[in-house]
Each structure stands twice: as structure tokens, then as C-alpha cells.
Length: 376
Image 1 (cartoon, rainbow, N blue to C red):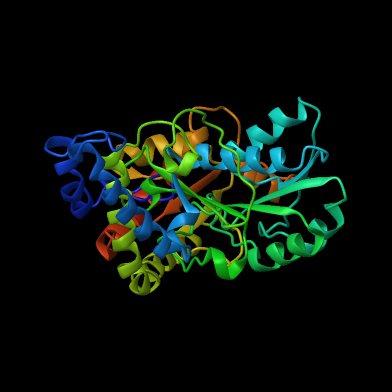
Image 2: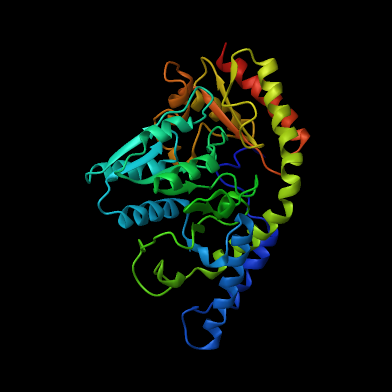
């Protein structure tokens, strides 16, 4: 198998599995217990919290664990809206992850107004559009750090500055860049940032939410005192340990990530664009993550192409994994190129550190074969 869908999920690292195992087998107590067998696990959780915080430039007290990025996104938006009950306006973009877009849509049904900022044909956001969209009624701006389909980078520092100057809270979906690019939430100045462990070598089912020290927050999950009262529910210690271990490994490997992955991505991309006449790049050539390449194959249905690639042992996607069961075309590519059929003819390749040059060569050969079959 040649796995080229790391923006959907990453393999759980062997070191992460090893770190988690004792908390499935021997150390299975409840951290909220008063006796030592359980209560000693509070220290284990705090070690993991510190590891995640260090990866994103936060202090440990600003990190709360969640079940996934969807929960983190929902919790942040809910908290921000709850902190400004007199304001009924949300600003987001047309290319956000479904967990943000769906939540905003649900809020519109409850009387909120949402502005979905457009992107240009390269998937980039214009800060002037944001400045024009924010009003005195705006409770929250929610914009992603990097796009999950194209890898496109949004100007997060500029966005944060605009929000600060207008007194508006800023939530950032930071799922994709963590472990692939430098992320420093405090330096940038976001109020909330969402993370997902399975995007950088931890298991699925564990996420985190950065809440800036003075940012308002009210829990979405009500229950016990866990997570300093910010999220009720017994902590899943093995998964938390796994996310902490993965965060520590990601921080150590980050300096080499770009130099290891970008050349492979570029070789794959250049090979596709130079040998397949119907191929076209989606997104900006340089302002994107080093591992991501979104390619339109004009005239070729993306789902048919993915089926044939799968038969060749190549794993890729047509967009977000969360929408893989939907018949809808890519909303990201549609927002970039509304006058084109490209949204139904696009494949995303997202590489990782375990990919190598031989896999890239094999992918180019397999892709050329299946495109010829479909374009005949």
C-alpha cells in the first residue's frame, strides 16, 4: 500500500503505541479516584498536557483535552457565542472544515447571521474582506490556519490583529499545520485553536483545544470537575498519553519535516503536471503546507479515479475524509473555481515522513495508467 492521505489521518507511531499500552493493561484506574491507584494518573495527564502545550507554544493550563477536532471546533464557537449574548454575527470562510460550517449553519437556524468569506482562485483569503465583514454585532471570527484540501495558508497573524483591534474573539481551526509547520498560538495571538491527535501520529478519538488564558470559556459538556471544570467526563488516559507522546515526537521531528516531505511532494506534483495534460494544480504554488497537493484531472470523475487508484494500492482522497460518504463535490474547490467542474474532478495527495521516492515513482506510474483508462 502507498498511503498518500495524511491530511485525513496518520499512522499511529510505534513509540506512541508503546507509551499507551501500560494505561490499557496495568494502569487502568480512574484519575478522579481518591486512592493512589487512580489519582496518580492525574500526573500522567498533566505531563501529556505539557507536551501538547510545548508543541503549539502555549502554557499547559491553556490546553484542554477533547475527543476530536470537531468537538474542539464546536466547543470554541459555543464558548465565544455564549460570551457575547448580545451579538448575533459570525464570520467564517466558504472553505472551512465541515465541523465549522455545519455548526455555523445550525446557529443560523437559531437566529444568528453568518458571513462566509470568499477565497480567490488560488484558495487564498483577502484580509480586506474580513475587515469589511466584521461589524459591531460580530461575536466571533472562526478561520482555519491551513486548508485541509489544498494546504493553503491563511494570514493568521493578520487575522488575529484585525480581531484584536475590533474587540472580536478569534477561533482558529489549527488541525492541519500541527506537526507539519511551526505553530505558536501565543505568538500569533489566537483566542482558541483546535487540534486533532490523529493528524500527527496519535490515535483517533483524542483532540485538544487551546483556550488563551483570559479568553472566555464555558463548557459544552457538563458533568464533573475534569479538565479544570471545562469538560465533564472521565479522561481517556491511554489516548491522552498517546497524544502527548506524539506531540513530543512531532516537536523533535519538525525541523526536518519540510526538508524530508516537500521534495517528495514536489516530485510527485511536477511529475503529474508535466506528464498528464489534463492535470491542473489547485491552490497557491508556495503558500501552502509542504505535504499537500490538490490536482484537478479535467474530464475525469474523481471518485472513479480513486477507485482505480485503490486497485493499484494507492490511497488518496477527493477532499475531506469527513465528507467522503457525501455525494457533494469539494466545497473548497467549488469556492475557488465556481465556474468550473473541477470540484468533481479533483484528487488530494497528502504525504508523510514514511513516504519515499520509490513510492512517488510508483504513484506516478499507476496514476498515468488509470488516467489513460478513464480519459480514453
